[in-house]
Image (cartoon, rainbow, N blue to C red; front, side, top):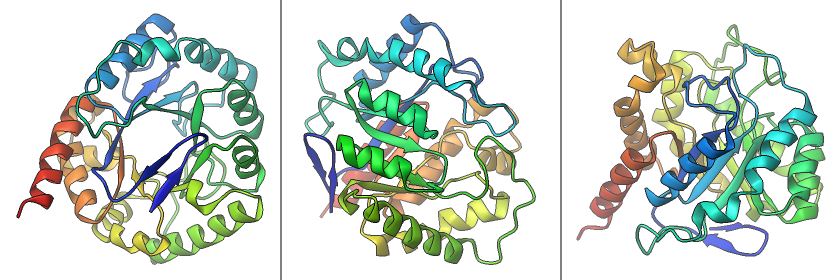
Length: 290
């Protein structure tokens, strides 16, 4: 299995990738967002040094109980970070021979107007679209620029809570969703090799739905695409552990990494890169032991 990027490709199977989270906003659910570019650059650099293969930059919070920021403001924030991208990884030594180098820059965004503006700035290799790909526009923009596209499972409009969503068979619905979205993306000119699947933990899902996704994640192997699991500090972890503070959920996050790796997930989106890298490194070594 191959993940095509604008000027390179990542071949699987391989050790799962660690995606570090950098929030260039002041409204992150985990309390780690910042509007100060120096702070954001320093965080990204520390994540790369800790082993991050991908840096996922969000200039707007994904929280569903907050209004969307204007596109112009989102682009201003992202471009301020993008201008500093090279200094984030240059001069840093890869943590080991398996780390993707230079790291992949991912843009966490969803509105086509923002996607277009961000991709025009260069350097972005992956669009992490939390909008559930309601139409072909973001797929077409990625195809035009050679960028990869992450498609997240959800329902309804982004930035709106969907606490009442009920699933009779969440995995069956997810399989049908990805079949439809992969066909939509391909019809828009995007190669299937440029698509990543995201089960959308906590998005339009309740506690039991999320636990079912972790338990049955292996069903997504049928699509032959890398699966990214956004495990970090999720609400479902807080519900299980009765931990209202997201920053206290890193041990639970590692538990979710273990479960998802056992089901074949290839990419993990996390706040605490060091803990995730260590867990994945050890689990990978165990899986390869003879």
